[in-house]
Figure 1 (cartoon, one colour):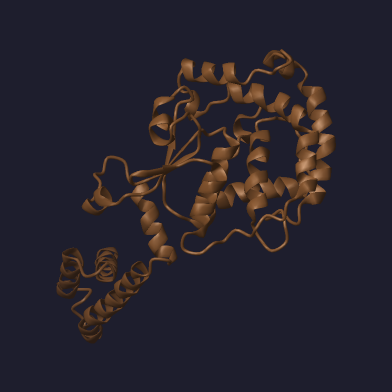
Figure 2 (cartoon, rainbow, N blue to C red; figure 1 turned 30 degrees about the vertical axis):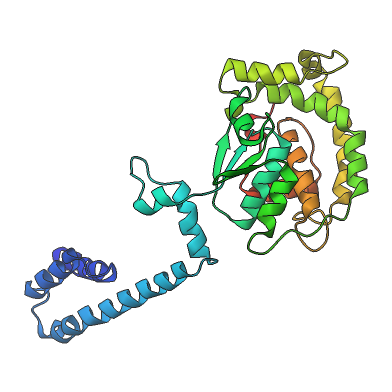
Length: 316
């Protein structure tokens, strides 16, 4: 019985897979075996191949139609597969000729996160390029100075995070709602700016980030981000308990300003989310902050829909 059952399973899966040679051979072997020789199998074995062939053809026809629709989920998944793949495989001819936009960024940079968000929100394929923090040549060749993010498309390149967001958002139909000029959120950020800087700068300096892959790159960032009043990063870390307590007390105020755990304003994601989430993401480097429920869920949700990791696994 085990041998006959195995042959029958091979027949089924071989036929559903599009009738490869192995499936047909398995059917023939089953028909010749004592398990398939009985009269009760004669008619089913005659009808099974054409029936399964028709089912397989219909299945592949459905997939072909899905791939033919540029805006479909299947088409987007196929396009996204162009920037990933199995280990050790070679690129196909189509992959070698396809040109995707390249977004040059630093992982820690809030302005770079803005540009990454819109690609994630719209589900658009692109190539993400992390530059070393001491790389002056690459951005200078692209836009004339060391500033990121930079969007490179063919022979053109552009900087300014919100300009990039606007360009990508308006392509193939906009999805972001306009900003409603949230002065309340801006005021909260300004009031807590120094506490946030003292909590995040020393932690960014020690974080495992692609732009800090060499000592020189990390040293460049640290040198350019010292406090103007001479406060050392070590002193900020020592003062962390008091700073964390101070900011934790302020977070409920910001929590109350959010419409929901999925967007800052009613009606869906807007440019106000594009400017708020990056700053909150950097704060996930700080271990011990007590996030209000709605605000914490908002951060997790935006990270998920934008396909941008948080820092909570390396928080300190």
